[in-house]
View 1 (tube, one colour):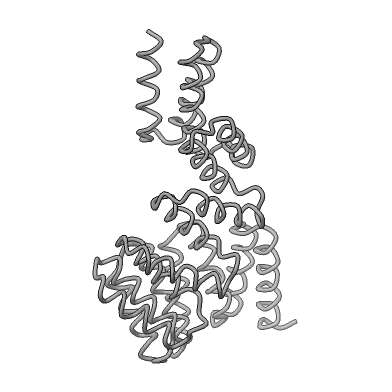
View 2 (view 1 turned 180 degrees about the vertical axis):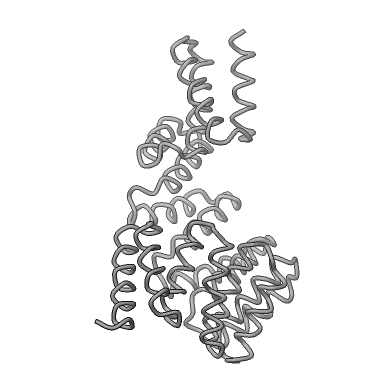
Length: 301
């Protein structure tokens, strides 16, 4: 077996290992052996770069994906990938340069167009972001990503009607788009339409029954509408899926504190205190947990 075939075999092993255990050391080692045997194996550099991206090891991701642009200097996708690494590193100017390079190579590359729009949004340039998102949608009316980004832009600027319209447009293209469903649910909570908000969170749960965030949000709606027992059930369901869900833990502690005040019980107090300390062990800066713990301490003194 020659070196080229051996490099391909190592690449395929890396793909299998990555599929079975994303971000695994085995996949990394397999891809590394592949590029040692064939230093021109672009796909191995790309896959390796994406593993490092998932690990938030941006320096190594940069090295791998920069090598991909050197091997394929006319490939717009290579520059989009490299731009994304710069974006994650907070180097927005360099990210924009890479996206613009991709667009120079292919003027209809919608990924590059909406990526430039996203950089504009991060830089606080609303009109620049709006222009690029709309341009990407015009280039491909069926694309989901630019429409979602446009909806999110409107949402951030409290343009609720426009945001709802674009989120609905996303769901027309992709019915179970989780982020669009979440954002629509949260938006309707802000508008005070709790029935409509609940429908969107329930859509998420219908396809993902263990979605801890959706259960927590439904619990919050029950709590707002003074259905505390239903809220407790929803928070407990959230924590059954993810015991580390901070908001569900704090929300459950808040309701338990209300019940404790109505019927003081030292064991209940201990349970609430333990829950809040658990949250603070995960996130020492969790302000709601700190405030509730201080209030509970005063109440028990």
